[in-house]
Length: 178
Image (cartoon, rainbow, N blue to C red; front, side, top):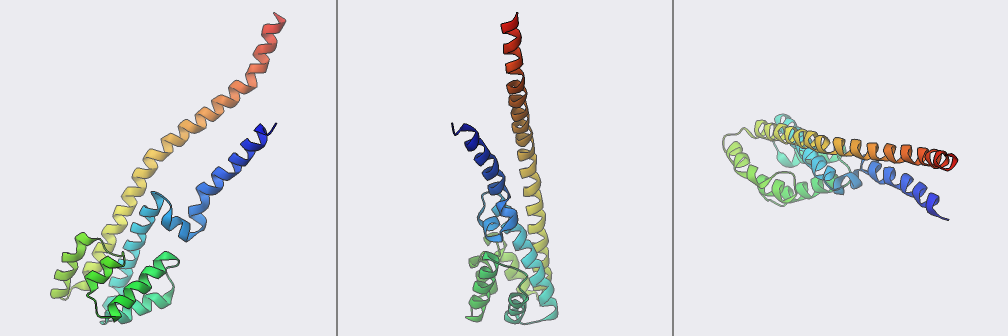
């Protein structure tokens, strides 16, 4: 009978796959729901870092090269950064490059354009970064507010199943004795 073996395998595999996004950045990037929160969080960090870097350097391509060489990002985020830097070096506009490489939502393009016109780009990038970080925090909070009660229900059902399984032989024995 392979029933207990299957339960043991399931009990080992479920926590493994649930913990995978915490070990591997590429898995975290593509993991459903958690991946989108992670990407928004990385967008916020990147835009803040770019804004702070642009305060010290005036050339965008140098600031992007500095961030690329710092290896602050890894996996898919580093690939996006390389794609952005290449696009800027080929002469694309900053807002188009940021949107096409996935670092900026399309709704923020006019904000970046107006910030460039008034020479306030570092401040604008930092503010967009802060907004993306707040958004990621809000999504993570909402996700946990949904998942935690579901996990508690699942845990209660498992404990109830174990309790009933432990007492069923005792009840069966009492019925047979009476």
